[in-house]
Length: 89
Image 1 (cartoon, one colour):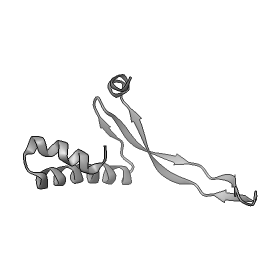
Image 2 (cartoon, one colour):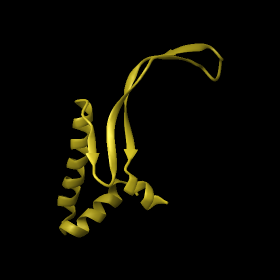
Image 3 (spheres, one colour):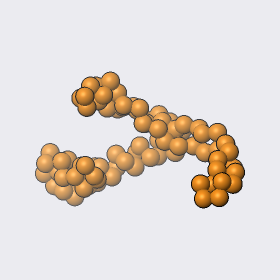
């Protein structure tokens, strides 16, 4: 399922594809804004999105074998809820 499929599913409830697209875009935007501020987004029965810090580390260039420095960075992380894990099984 991609974003267009999700919009199609939502449009079956709100009956207008334009409103469905706006709703889906707003949900994604709200999650992105919250994560950018360092907040956690929890959706009951689905899961949680949070920002995780990755420390700097040393890696290797696979072509040359040369050591390279990988900088520290923040990355989004998703943890599924128990209900979602059970639904998938």
